[in-house]
Amino acid sequence: MPILLDDFVSAFSLFAAPFLRLSGMMVVAPIFSAPGFNFRTRGLLAVLLAGLVAPSLPPPPFESIFTGRGAVAGITEVGVGLIMGFVLQLAFGAAVFAAQAQSMTMGLGFAMAVDPQNGVQVPVVAQMFVILITLLFLTLDAHLVLISAVVQSYNLVPVGALGIPNEIFARVVALGSVVFTWGILMALPVLTALLFINISLGVVTRAAPQLNIFAVGFPVTITSGLLIMFIVMPVYIDVMTRIVEMTAFESLRILG
Image 1 (cartoon, rainbow, N blue to C red):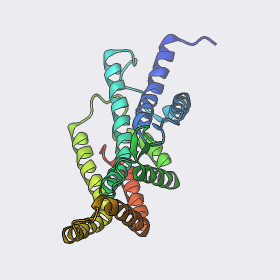
Image 2 (cartoon, rainbow, N blue to C red; image 1 turned 120 degrees about the horizontal axis):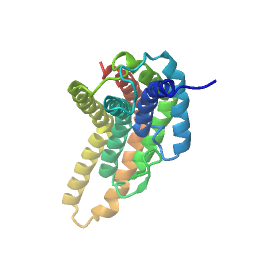
Image 3 (cartoon, helix red, strand yellow; image 1 turned 45 degrees about the vertical axis):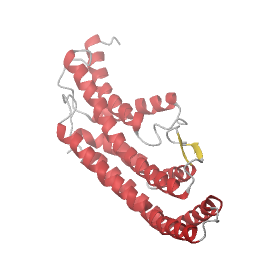
């Protein structure tokens, strides 16, 4: 059966919309953007999901994705996907931020390891936090929630939309400030305890100047920091869970 070129271009344009939005999301979203997630597998997953979503979408308001309006709409699709994936990435950024603040205060800032999520060097405490929030991310099915949010986002930003409203970027900035505030609160117990420990070491050093503060201070701060982290670990898990749930919910709500 012959296939008309116009019908093929129309069907391809409808398929390209969810493919571009899903691909943009996977470029920056946690788990999907990890170096261990093969690029070819990521592309095949985007193609499969786009093939499932495309039949449920209304026809685009342009003739072809290869026209000027179609190209602008394609850029908008990628931008929406990038924003939705970036919202979830904020949760991981908050965890790394909290861990780095604690590492510097504990004296472990020089102990670096490769972050399995982003492929960059971070303190070993941050690596532990990244692994922990990744497990929570998968346990809460946040990756499935994100894919569902991308599909539902067509109710807010339909196919063929030209440009992204400025209000969406303002909401992303506001959400980032809230998420990183949670990160600071997560690190606050260790930072407060180590502050008092450092003050105590300073008083001891003042009273006994012959005491080598570097030989005594580092073991005390590292041991105390790790002990406090072990004590408040349930709080870490609870806060990370709330951050992941909040960002997963906001990934769709931020568009409306």
